[in-house]
Image (cartoon, rainbow, N blue to C red; front, top):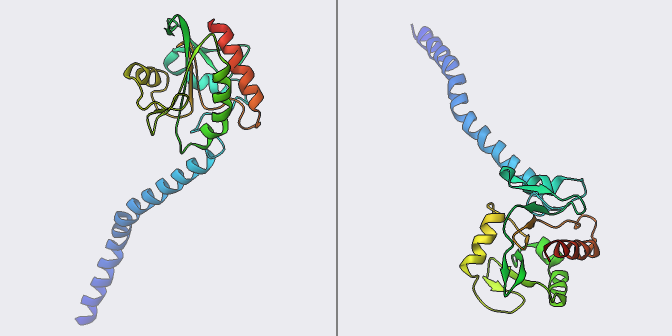
Length: 198
């Protein structure tokens, strides 16, 4: 009789074991899969700017920025998207924004070049904000005016960086030529976009 009871216990365990394993392994498998996917995304984006950067492929950035049908890719320079908005101005001049962060390597790559370019501009008003410190890099002033925060949110609802907004008519998330390490192309593109808003 004892053997029979032992046999029943083994059979019960054999029956319950798959259901116990699936009950514990399924959540573990989901967690492991999630961690792996996060690492893949993290390392896949290290050479780009938070998922969107380079215009190496013709319409990658412009297509990605045309969210919800709000914008269209520009023919001459493919790294910016054109929006059908009213031109935003200050003192009668179009306003240009760069939103960046101190910890962002992609912002650092283009930051000094943008700052130098900004200082040369006479026909547009230029702001560069560090969103993590709320500092205007070009003036050293603290705080981002509420109307400028709204522009950042409008053109970049995911709040990735760097974000460029030219006259509220052209915008780009990420760098256009970082993969090529070509800062001159960035400057040329900035100049081309400014010529469109003047």
